[in-house]
Amino acid sequence: MLIESVELRELRLPLVSPFTTSFSTQTERNTLVLRVAGSVPTPNGRVDVVGWGECVALGEPLYSPEYIDGAKRMIQLYLLPMLARVQAEGREVTAETVGALLEKVVGHRMAKAAIEMAVLDAELRARGESFARYFGATRTRVPAGVSVGIQPSVDALLGAVGGYLDEGYVRIKLKIQPGWDLAPVAAVREQFGDEVLLQVDANAAYTLADAQHLRRLDDYGLLLIEQPLAEDDLVQHAKLATAMSTPICLDESIESAKDAADAITLGAASVINIKPGRVGGYLEAKRIHDLSRAHGVAVWCGGMLETGLGRAANAALAALDGFSLPGDISASDRFYTEDITEPFVLRDGHIDVPQGPGLGVEPILENLARVTHDTQEVWPA
Ligand code: OSB
Ligand code: MG
Image 1: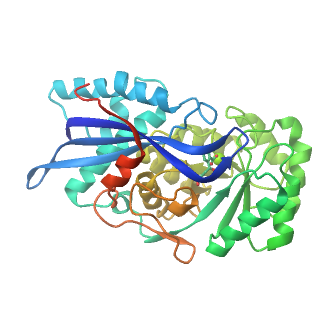
Image 2 (image 1 turned 90 degrees about the horizontal axis):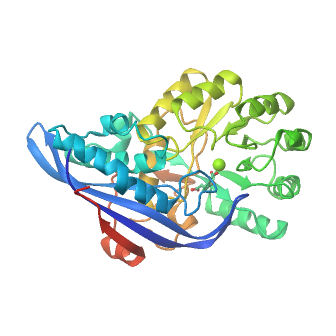
Image 3 (image 1 turned 60 degrees about the vertical axis):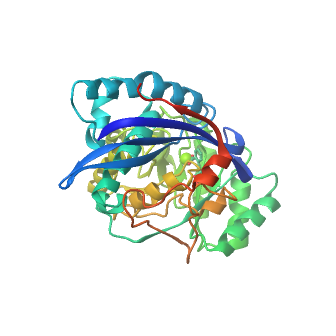
């Protein structure tokens, strides 16, 4: 596309309830949304179009090195100027080349992913093609899992899990940390039975020295344990995998298809949580899906408390055949009373995959205005 303007908005959406993980408690989701406008060549001539991207960085660098203010600066100071130079040379930026065009910048995958998502949305809207169709996805709905934060008490946890099961969620993920692991898992199994699809996520809160403790989770028939050890502990994850029968799933450790290939080769992961933002975008996410599938490694689509924009794209990606486990793709009201798009709702434990052009959803401008904390025109870069 030929980019003509880029608007960067910082949003603040209150959460319906605090979300506690081993690394923080969030009561509000601050997020960045990018609106890219320009024109795209089509067989019928150039079409003016707008595309939307969402940056999944959190407010603080606790889950990943990226954080909102940093991503904002990165997009404005480095990434967009690189694309502006490409255009000044008379070349066009496309979704399939933007990753390579920004490759010289080390890391900052969430910032890069937001730009790629907006450009891809613009191009697909111009072509009248949905994200799902572009990815080659065939399913029209995806099973919805829910990520349940660390609670003040086991009773509170049972109340929360019971509520989600009543709503129809088909898979429960419990956040765990040292001191909040065996007891909550045992209580949920006891109360809701062995049939519930149950998994846990430690967000890197343990070390290999905890292997004998973690092994006790094997008694609870968990689908997987997500990221028990540190981001760069690939070798240690491989060792842990030999010490316990619960499958090891990696989240934070996987920032690229190369990381996924390394983890698979090492035996550090038998399942991968694919988060498009964490790996630099939907195209790299699709490559990880393809490679995992070729190696018989199960994947599922993770979440980062996305607004309806990111949720739409995640649902489309998760509709690919290789996503064999339910993702962290819940209804909008899991986190927000009011989303910036039409809300995603649960129907029979599933979320419908948008079928319209591009993301297939639009921001509702009044809603967007209500939660916008800051808007900047950042182009010409
Ligand atoms: O580790 O999967 C994670 C949210 C923020 C940061 C990291 C994680 C999460 C979640 C929530 O678990 C997933 C969701 O958006 O539903
Ligand atoms: Mg995780």
